[in-house]
Image (cartoon, rainbow, N blue to C red; front, side, top):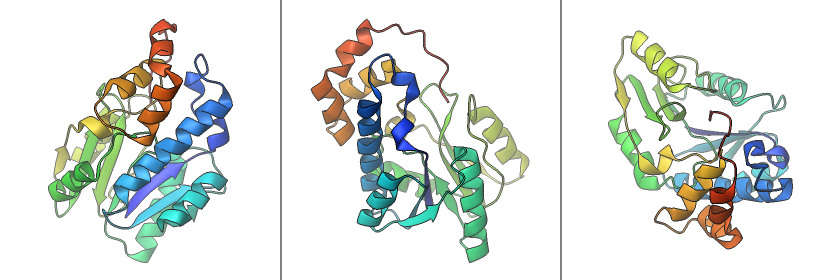
Length: 220
């Protein structure tokens, strides 16, 4: 089961506030989710873990399951709750993917699934090596995921501590998550024509990012 946790999109992407007002940030978050769901659509069962109205409606359009996240507290809590549901249903594996990696492709997802051990983990780090942008676990609840600053090394350590194989894949599309102004420039300049790329190119956000103060908080 592919799990995509989505928090309240009406307050999305606060770190981009120096460039974009909230309606623009929400629109960007929405089109990124469309890009992610498009990539996931042909790769197996998908569940969007959310209480956001747009995400709920979009998941239904894609034929994805909706796991309600009534508490809407954090990605970590949402995935823990969804993982327990998967375990109760006897689902053998989970692949957690965030909703803000618009360069993701179905080919990359299939690479994760093909690399997955019979029992164990596949981790895909963010491009900076600090965050975790995809996490496959089999069994589904092999260990708990804790997202936040510098999550990759802790995830790698706990995955290895299970005593089961842990595969690390570096995937360019999945590696780029959109948090800071410099990420917009990278997204705009990358090859491809995703909805998110078209949107920020229309906004000329890359030029704005070059002019913006780049002293942003650390990425998740």
